[in-house]
Length: 241
Image (cartoon, rainbow, N blue to C red; front, side, top):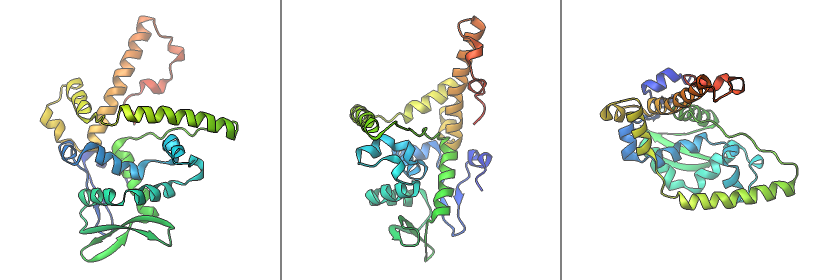
């Protein structure tokens, strides 16, 4: 069972097989690479609705593929990359990708102390919950269209914009900015933040953002520039996950 208070403390994810998905600190992520870590986490986290535009660019409408099929497709396309990250972020002796007939998907197989295992649907779901808990990820809303022609026109336009954005932000790694934000906004010691497990870092980073937004809204209400009747109470509850 995933318990958020334990994850924030820095607990790793432990399987009955002995597999451990390590919970790195901010400093360890600086060595692993923030983009690499997030790519591995997103392998398990992302649902088709989160990738509507990229999938469309590959000729796939997001409602025509399941989450497990998406996982399998992404894993197969970048086998070596994900296996390297898996070995880096776990305690297993060896790992490889294999098509499991019973599951009808490609998944990660691994060896611990001479025994072979594979990550099945329950394992995939558990890792999904673990990484979602660490990153506090919020899934995108599903999109619906009035007809196929409308869908094609809108998604084609969106994909063009997506490609332009991807080109202009191809080397955009904002992890150092995220660290600076937490340190400066909350008057933290740099070395202390470097020692944070990633779940605690995300917790502070995201909730500091929410608190600042809530403070701005409250200032506007008290100053008479914002109509309080049009503000959702949830927007002011920055402390809730």
